[in-house]
Image: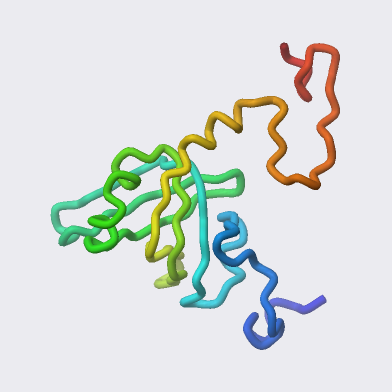
Length: 148
């Protein structure tokens, strides 16, 4: 195993990086793995939209997944193309370039997709996120945690 303090940059250590590439999504907890400028896709619940008057048309969106939060920067020209998703989406998939600046990681949005209809699937107790996933053990009352 490589020691992070002495390891070469990821791009040198692994010629074919193992992080998910678009259209597959990278979870927030793994945003430290791809190199600066890598094209990635992320997805999550929209927990914040900001459009400060001083930001010259830039919109800041914060997404949350099961591992953490993702900061997304939406430039005006991207917002104009994906306005409906940015305004109305409760859950989004964003593809863009990874940017790290002063210890903060952002995704500079290139495409934005409203995947809010997938929220209904998350509430379905029979939903399996991956076709090859192991079955969920059922308890007496039907759900894995034993609730009705």
